[in-house]
Amino acid sequence: MSKVSLTIDGKKVEVPPGTTILEAAKSANLRIPTLCYLPEVQAIGACRVCLVEIEGNKNLQASCVFPATDDLVVRTNSKKVQEARKFTVELLLSAHPQECLTCARNLKCELQRLAEEMGIREVRSVPAVRDGLPGDSAGRGAVCAGTRVRYLHRAGLRG
Image (cartoon, rainbow, N blue to C red):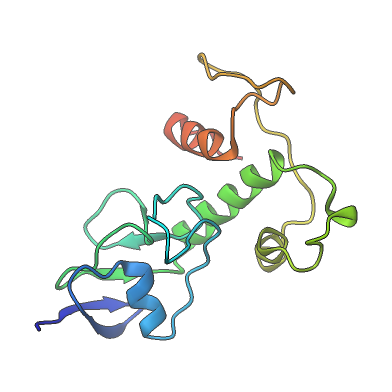
C-alpha cells in the first residue's frame, strides 16, 4: 500500500491514504488541540479548534476533516493559527454555561484546559444579533456555539 507524504511543522510524515491531517499529526506525536473529534464518530469539524495553516491555502482548515495529501506543508502553531484558536475558544466560552465551579467535569474539562493553555482568564461578550443571525431563547444570539463561531468568522468579526 502506498503512503502519503506531507510535512507538518517541518517534520516529514508518511501516512496511509485517507488519513486526516489531525491523524497524521498524532502519528508523528504532534499535538493539535480539538474538542469535537471522536475517532469512532464521523468527523464534522464543528468546533474549529483544530484549525491549521496549509501552505497555498488562503483559509485555515479543520485538521480533523482535511485529508492528508502528498506534498502538503502544514503549520499547526503559527501566529495566525494561535489567534484563530484563541478566538474560537473565547467564542465557545461565551456561549458556555458559566457554572464551571459546580460542574462535575470541573478541572477535567477539555474546554477549561484549552482556555488555560491559551491564557484566557475572562469571558468576553460577543455581539448578540447581527444581519439576521438567529437568536436562542436566552437571547445569546446564536443557536449553538458552532453556529456562532462560523457566523462570526464569516462576518469577519474579531476581538
